[in-house]
Amino acid sequence: MVNKASGNGKLEMYGGLWGGLIPLLVLIAILVWLSVAGRGGTQAFWAGGWLAIVAGLLFAKNKTEFCGTVMRGLGDRNGIVIVTAWLFAGVFGKLMVAGGLVEGLLWFGLKTGAQGAIFTFLAFIAACLFSMGTGTSTGTVLSLIPVLYPAGVYLGANPTMLAAAILSGAAFGDNLAPVSDTTIVSAYTQEATMRDVVRSRFPLSVSAAAISGIILLLFGGGGNVASLPELTAKVDLRGLLMLVSFGIVVGSALAGRHIVESLIWGNISATIFGMLIGKIHLVNIFHIPAKRGESTGLIEAGISGVVGAIIFALLVLAVTQILVESGVMERILRWAEKTIARNVKQAELSIIFVTILASIPIAANAPAELLVGPSYVKPIGERFNLAPARRANLMDCSVCTIFFTMPWHICVIVWYGALVSAAQSFNIPLPSIWAAMLNPYTWALLAVLLFSVFTGWNRKYADTNGGKNEILA
Image (tube, rainbow, N blue to C red; front, top):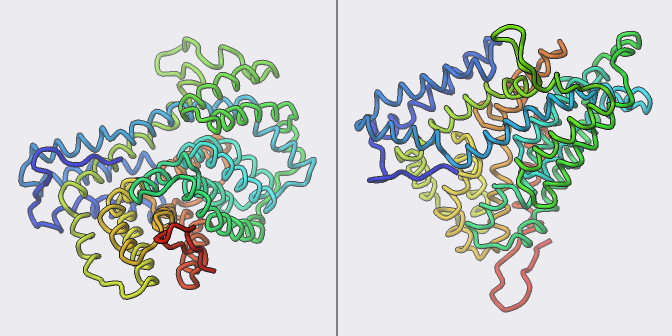
């Protein structure tokens, strides 16, 4: 989570609010420029983050305090956990591919007919299950894209919709999993129990997932299935054994183990299974290269594959910290509070609007909840006697909508970085980073949320009479 400022708690910028916004505006302008030019990518985006920080320094009144702000952003605890998970997830993906999981999935697709839209739908379900078990959207896309994306493209899935399906599944788990940081923050800031939050959020999240599944079944196909001669060398039943490693990671996470520990067990088991079926040898994992500069094996290759995303994510976290400590987010919140909600529907709509607004410029969605949860969502919700779980759900669902479409947000950055790596490794089509805008879960969840507000479905009021909370139909 983004750290609060130290010292006087305020980073003063020339130009006030606009000065604080300069780093974000520079970053977004370069991202859009590169993406429109068709040259987008996590490594290409490094320049945007670097220039954004340089531009911010020029507008900072106290240069030393600005540098401290940048360092606090780079050292953000939440970011360090994500980076650590990326290192092991990157190697896990390489081991799964080297062990033949893609070939195994191809065999399964050819034998069962799970091709085109059906494969896209199954990829969405797999991502939902993985993200539910781990609570991490970034870990989901890092672990699944190296396997599911190339297999799906070979089996006739629409590349853009397949990529969006995996991102959708990652958003689902981030939204609903009790181990997700957004779920924990939303419950904590509203003083709600985890049990109430998850149980009452389940109908909202699952309804959105059902709508997403229908969309993917309708539009997830239409790609070209590789000809049988081309696939022959790539089909291998033994590769399905690698799914056991996937099950170990998910099972470990569901058992309450840390995601990093779960990924380490996955790495170890993937190595063992890959060796058992003859796909991986110790020399593939690590060896002394013949020439300086050559890869030492799968460990180095796995880490190298996520370096681009890691560096850019750190730069974005630094820019995010500037927004927080310069008072930009505080000004936005004060402006939002000037709107007086006259009834419960307007109050809930304002919670959705303010939360989404706060999540747009911030690279991680849990810090957005921390900003608006105590300062806006809780007092507005209490004014209209909304139950703590209802307030938490409105806020958490909101940060899992538009957030998962913006190309400067961490999960989308990681998602696209994994797509770039997979596309280059298998010489297959690469969608634009703006394909995140087609994420069906994002828009379905927003539609379900608005339906809930306007109809009162799933709305809970606080218990004031010693009885159970009322759920309005």
